[in-house]
Figure 1: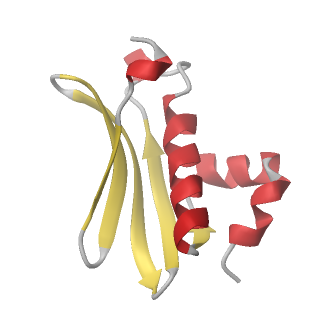
Figure 2 (figure 1 turned 90 degrees about the horizontal axis):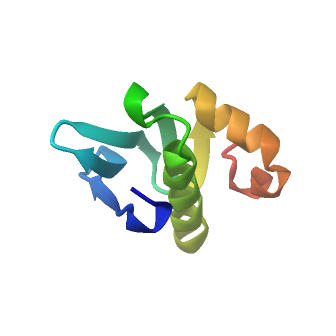
Length: 99
């Protein structure tokens, strides 16, 4: 499956949400978040099944979340270790960090 075939869906309710890529019958990559304020989300998990790791799936999920946050004016609290590491690698995202 090439990168251009991945479809990222955003699912959410009043309290939580996730970005998901369906990878097969029982496989999906996901980034989950909690809504912790009017314009703040806390990223608590990013995961990709072992068979699909190394394909940039987690990064695609984070990139989509960042794009959505920029568009909506949402601030981010990164708790997930992967997202924390991505924020360190991308100082240009610092304006999205919730204080």
